[in-house]
Amino acid sequence: MTVKVGDKAPLFEALTDTGQKISLSDHIGKTEIVLYFYPKDETPGCTKEACSFRDSWEEIVKLGATVFGVSSDSVDSHKSFKEHHNLPFTLLSDSNSKIREMYGVKGLLIPPRVTFVIDKHGTVTHVYNSQMNPTRHVEEALAALKKLNQQA
Image 1 (cartoon, rainbow, N blue to C red):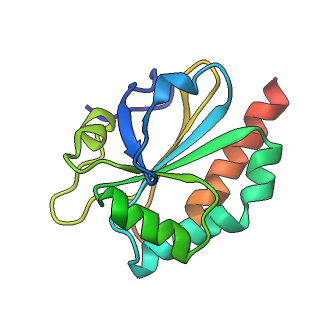
Image 2: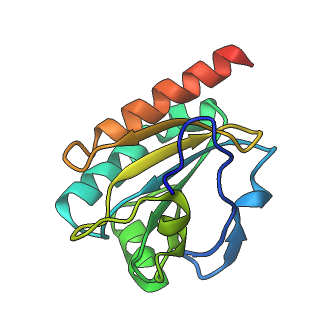
């Protein structure tokens, strides 16, 4: 099942780039969430996407959001990727692809690149899916966050 705008965000637990377990439910009610799925650490498109989120970090924080990047890479791979590119947000390891399954973002050859914006109530308010335009994901997320802030 693919998660759509208006759906409640499926809740999950995952290991972070530091090896700590977090739960999405811990962030619901406190902040908007940008949850972006990407194929693989250190690949050209994924690096561009992650660095776009990094370069827009101040604006994302001002809009009151938390960012989580999700791929099937290991905790160690995420830690290295995060340090290498000075990423200020948390990367989550989905080594068994369970989170991808919950959100309906499983691919055939390459895992899809999909970004979800989730409001403080845990409702998905925006979905952007583009494998070929990785830097557009942050633009879409920022526009959705600005819209949420205007409605608040």
